[in-house]
Length: 373
Image (cartoon, rainbow, N blue to C red; front, side):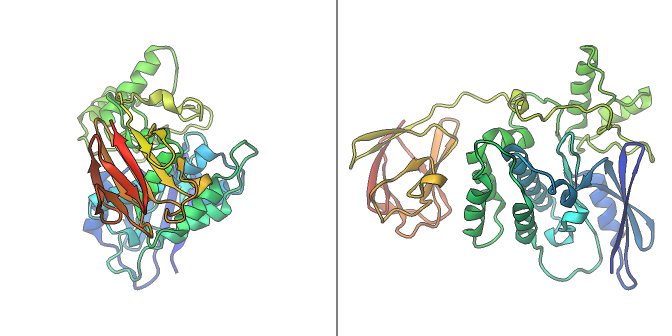
């Protein structure tokens, strides 16, 4: 049985993982993972043949956090970080089934809302990654705060249960539909680096140096010139969130100096969106002109779940198709609908993005629209 021991030290979270007899650590994989500094994971170090020590910002377990009420923003911010972490693992060829998918051994800082997971680079590990089960545990543990939109959890359950398997792309599109600022904040869709949650240490450093120049003491910068230089020389894959100077704390999540960078009402202030021109749909049956005014715009017959509710047509699925805007190009994606989606009479494959041009005839089942830019 794997044993876990957590403690706080100098504003850092330390987690020691002791492996049972017969479990061996892949040292090369551990070193490679530590060098990558993948955002969303505590940094590992082998201290004994069977013991790994992880370090990162001070945090509590997700199990403890979810005992308290959670807002819609914080709920989806949490889920999106899980999605982003799995995407980063995939891009770096690290398997998902080596992550500890357990609410008691996944961590979150209650000030910055950053999630930190454990990656366990064992020589051999059996079974597949139960990421869906992990997310379901988050869903069913979540207790919405008393606010106007209290149905966000049930809507997400409905969507999530409809997925045949864990699909980070679809889940991320759903979160963008609920609140695009969340995805933008985590994905860093900006023209310049804000420094927060960046994969570049230099951006992180420059951001907080500017804050200090504005007399906003954050306590986040290293104090010595040597440490400053080390930060600026890190390559672009470093996250900037875990500064490994021996056993020194990063100071990122000092209890007494909350940064407040991710307050719900301020999150969008980090974003500099490129100008987007939204298209329209003309529904032939009703003569309606529909403005497709979101980057991901959903069409279907489930009123609580879509951006445009297609009335009086049972051939349309509950969530039938998404129209996706990317700059000056537009695409439609069929969401495994029962009666298919067509462009100019040609059926498109499910879950594939097909481009829409000005004047394209878009058909959901047998419901016809004209797409205009």
